[in-house]
Length: 455
Image 1 (tube, rainbow, N blue to C red):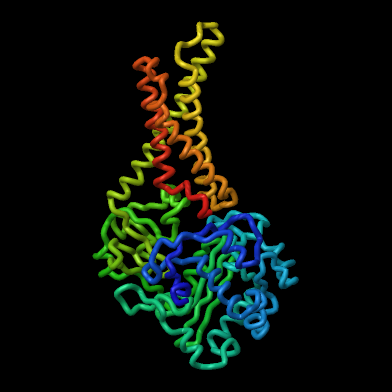
Image 2: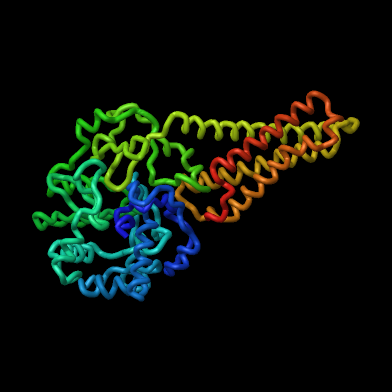
């Protein structure tokens, strides 16, 4: 349970935005579970899935629906009468109506429209309410009253459950993240398209701060204002900077294995960092370095970034490069075949002596490669736009089918009698077509695109 609270259960990222409006937690987990890429307790990586799983545990232990439990034990005792938590906000008529009036903006200040930007998996990021209600919640946490009756429960709640590796610096306390300003704060933040929220608790001095903004990743109020109250935010130490090793890094709050791991190839997913001073984000935040897991990890508050070895990076790019070459070849092959066929038809030239079965094989193999690329490009575009509505099992069934089909096409010429009737040029083209098909199969296997059952 602590691994879930500390976001150390080892789960990969999950899609934030997908079609669906379910409030049945058990049904959600039957439909989707992310891959568990790391041993529990070894890797800190913010996990919305872990939060949803904790909510399901609350349901199983209490015997109540999660929304009912929260209303009975949190909202009603604190008189938070303007907060809802169900996906459709039907548990609070006032919130349901007022939510329609909200306007959200992206991190560039662009109006996003009227779409309710709620996260896909209930109840993650699902509480919608007023600043006044959030203040009531923060006040109860500060004053240590109402929510729990025994003092020892409050003491346990705020006790440290996770530290930065190799230090005694607080990282997490039963789900509350630590932020280090002039004093150590406990709290939590949230960001979704169009909105951001922060809750800070200075337990030592009995001071809290709550912030709501209608802009994604808003910086002035969410980052600079707390410094006016709690002192300057602590940043990376000089000693840590000196330990930093240049290289290629990727955030482990990602899809590290399985059929979504191809997202590592999205521009920006892997960053080349030569020195700390090249990255403003590294200079303005607090982090430490951990080498206990076999690779350099930059340990931030809620997540970490791992250094990728040159050999692994080379392998990633080699597989993608071969797949790209195969696609270029397939497009050229189909285009040239159609042009030659068209010219022969227009000029009424004699039929080609090339066996018809070879032509069909060559065309179908190339079309199979193009179909693979089209399906993958759609998924990449969806991922870059954070719209996972098209990420469906059938797309991966298609990948699996294409993998089998192209593997068969690649070896077909070895058993075909027609190869004896081909000239040197056609034989060379046959080899290129087969190798290209194998390059696509290699990508399907390497990026686990055949694992439709995971989706």
